[in-house]
Image 1 (cartoon, rainbow, N blue to C red):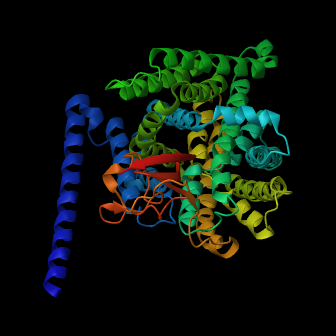
Image 2 (image 1 turned 90 degrees about the vertical axis):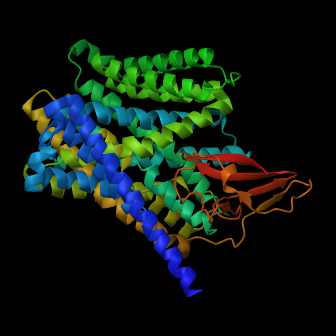
Image 3 (image 1 turned 180 degrees about the vertical axis):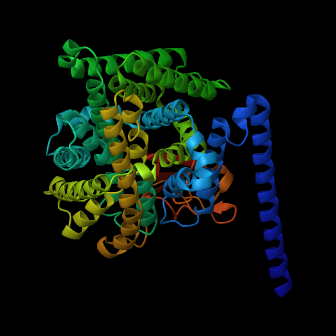
Length: 534
């Protein structure tokens, strides 16, 4: 037994060293190729070299910290960018060399990816049903609760933060509103994995807390991004007469552009097309259309319409493609995890310069985040009133509704990118500093509090609910891992045991019927049902 154990340990070490050597070789080849193609810009001190260093450093530190479940991977990525900008020698060679135009374009591309994912995850049929909420219907009551949880805390916190920003940071009203919407958006990247980990242990399942929060998270972000975009467009509008009609014009342009684009893609690549390569074609068309829409509308001065148009484009494609949209959403999620997330957070971290930070900005930002957070906390408790939840369950939901990260990183630097005057640049730097501060103050404590307080405040269900379909039950209770969809992103979503996966781990409800396993689980911040045949 001792010999076998030693042999296994030795083999694991060899495999780890081989993997590290392969990664180093790949990085070396990437730098050599970059230099051959771009010349001086790809050598140390060049802007392209700096971008590649930021990306690889953020990607690797994210992988190294992945075993720490309570630490969101985006936080180490943000800190890596911050260090590569502010450590004296590294900052001179890397952080300061990042081209502002490249940084702005990449951050806008990452925001476009976030909006496209959010659009694909939205259920338009459910949203339409929310217009006709009837209290006698349990489904409608649940839908209304999701809507209240998404809208009321977000609007309350945005209003509180905006009012405080005019007083503490001397922000003009529109800039204060932009800061309010930036601060108000919660981060599904932090909230969802933390709740899934609790759900795997049976906490909060009976009260439906994970399902409710996961369903409300995209709507919360959509509201914040749309509000920020409209305020941004009005703030930088040049024509005075246009300012009066700016908000409805942004809304109409965003809705119209997104709907036309979605209709065109749905007609060109219908869900009935199941030919080989159809998924890749849908993915390329959607990403190309989303990026062209975002950059094109920003170029003509309609940044708010750009965000709304991309969101509607994604939602329209999800409706038009039906089940065929799920593989596209999975590919976009994979692209976000592997490429956009490390780039976005490292670039945002590298945008913060310690010497430019003002003490009053940091103090005022902390006060805004704290007071507005308390307002959000109370708004969550109010939104859940009348649901029949226990006080400790409401308290936990309010805690889970506090972490911020992704939207703050995506929106924090947009106003600074648009700034043309010295005063606008000052306001943009302050807004970015508050956005980064919001990530640092809320993401790590929020994830930790969810993990610590969940077992103490939520009721535990020892076994997941099993739906008996009345059909023959299969003898096998373990499904081969290769039958799972290849797009499940995070270990927190499902636990793998060697090469098999137990359906009793990592899912909410399980249903069985002859030859199939029906699993309800969370994917891309959306509740899905997978049918696994065996």
